[in-house]
Length: 415
Ligand code: UD1
Ligand code: CA
Image 1 (cartoon, protein in one colour):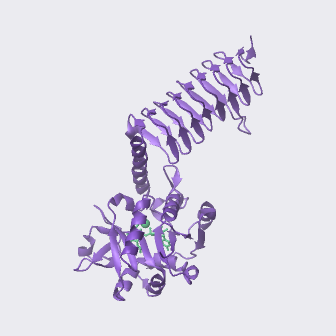
Image 2: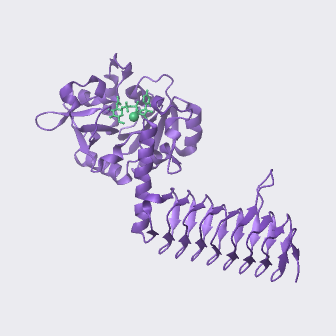
Image 3: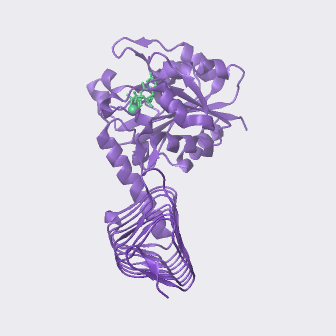
């Protein structure tokens, strides 16, 4: 099988986002758009990925890090010009090149794998991913000949009224034989109207050379969504968020009201856990089996809940673990805390984990009992089976020994 490399186009300005942040670094479900595209590139089997950066190049380069080779496009002269920046790196490469847009986070890995497979099975020189959409305005249109073969891609601005009615659009993903890509690129001429070199011109160039070009349609056109505006971003969030929720339900998690539930990426939830309405679960959260979460609670990054844990209304947990069967049923804040098993936390408990300079840790042992409306000023340590009385304030550096009871402001051990 020929080797695969990929190019991600991420140099564009993203003018319509009206943002100081580069477009590809805006988040969908808590993760930058570009991360999704990098993941797809890897899953497709690319042995090497080049990311073309331009607008706010440094920020994008910092984000990419070691995940790919970053190449700068100093003047934003269009998508063909962006790919040309990679040509020097492809001089001795004879495999296939997968070209992806850095602003399309909804493409699924199986879709891209299928595209590469279809390309190889058909022994094509170029395979274009297309989609049929209700509103094709703004996208390049797939122009087919009488035999139904793709002839060209016509950009919206250059399309006549008949072509504008074509509902099949160019998603912006291509699999091209490297040598033919390089040859076709050298034939792309400057489009005076848009002041750009169009990558889409390679389709007509390759067809004129009598080479095999094909367009493969995606089944779910939503995957092709390119983010150009904040509205597109919200739509992508809705689609991606919906897929995340569906996957949890398919894996045995009850979502009482999915429409009013937010779950970010990189979350794991065990079977038979029930998520009540208005729960916000950020990325990097782990929840065990048979837990009861919500309604109205927020689990922030670094939350680790064991099995049969209950976090009730207005509970907020951040960078903290709850052992099996521990409960915090009513409002409270737990941050930078390690809680053992079978711990009961009363209503209105607060860990004061931040002293203005650093975040400090709280440790609570197995079967400890934390009274309502109490506060601990971290760092503190409440040993196993210890009790902190209702309304108490356990001050910084204090410890309640195993099985002992502390009460008062400041809390003191009473027996
Ligand atoms: C492009 C396609 C269009 C397709 C659409 C899909 C061309 C000429 N048109 O249009 O057929 O339907 O994507 O979303 O290719 N970029 C660079 N350098 C540049 C210009 C753009 O790296 O000089 C990058 C952008 O960051 C972006 C991608 O290329 O990730 C696409 O560019 P964009 O300007 O969004 O193209 P569209 O007008 O959407
Ligand atoms: Ca775009």
